[in-house]
Length: 485
Image (cartoon, rainbow, N blue to C red; front, side):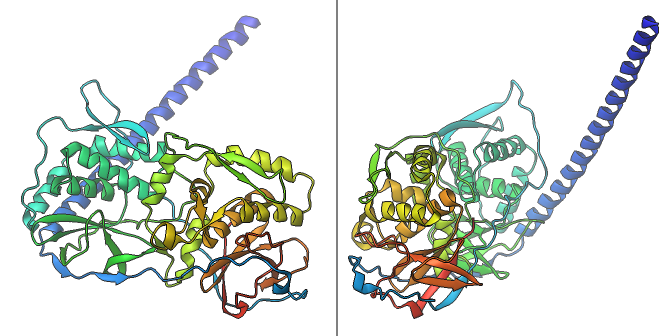
């Protein structure tokens, strides 16, 4: 009886393994067929693109969008006479709802190329990470002729399959290091210049090829038959010079603006760059010297904080932009960016313990006073020579911060540590914030879509409590930025 059961079990197992092998074979055949189909599609797309490049490139002139001037006012000490003891429903002109982030584009085809012992590699470093990508064995493809026909031939040469392994490695690194769009483009630039040994027309074309094959929107341009330029498109309005093509804004990467000739050749399913940061790139952490941040009123709200300096170098290169036509939306990009894991690991357990058991209002009071009194105020013009908003990590890193930096950091802490919604409140020359408590709280508030957002101003260095606005600010001129969770 046992032998019969064992035989039946073995037979079932063999049949099951045979069925699994058959399913695996069918799946592998499907993948092979799909890959061949994608390869054919990609070859056709690159051939069409190469042919289009040989058509005359049209002249195009730059436009200029200057960053709005919003001169910060020095903070005034809080005084009781600034508040009359009554609740106020503040008036406002604009509500900004930040646009949802776009997912990273996918490549034109899902390339998977396994390494082999004969592969040739180049090393490079970015964000402190040292890595490598495969490159073709043989002579560098030269790009001496940047006429229409010359670039067309060069693109066809790049698309002959020799750089597919390079592309596959770049896409893998984008995933491995969680690179947002701006970081990915900068990595491709570094790789391309490392391959050629310098910045040149060849490195620009290789960067553009890798970028477009990764699914992003770009256009090629040239300046006076000398320099080849890659133009990237973004769904944000970046301050400075830009070019309009087919109702889309394009920006020259790593090149000054000028009178260009541009090719209108495009790829199917291409996506523009998003500058929304829902997560941060993974860097090789290089910690700064710790800086003590302490609340004057609540001594338990104190922490020595180190920040990743590789992340600081990434932030300082980040394009300054706004969403659509709303200039005040520029602060939403910073305020909706998360704090780094490096800072959260140092700060959040300590503050969660200090805030445990408190009411929501008391939690917000403690966080507000920490930002008000734990950071030294200074005007951007004096420190940077221009207006410069900080990402939350930057406010903790740099020795000085102004009103916008404090409001950005405070609203980030409130959302993370209390779970309450927050807004930024903009007056000419000043940025404050508001918090949506679960119940009605005393003090000044903004009624927004039926919800009360109690005013909190992190720039009162003498520690104004929750619900107080200063007489220096005209509430009838306020605009509101509704932040995401």
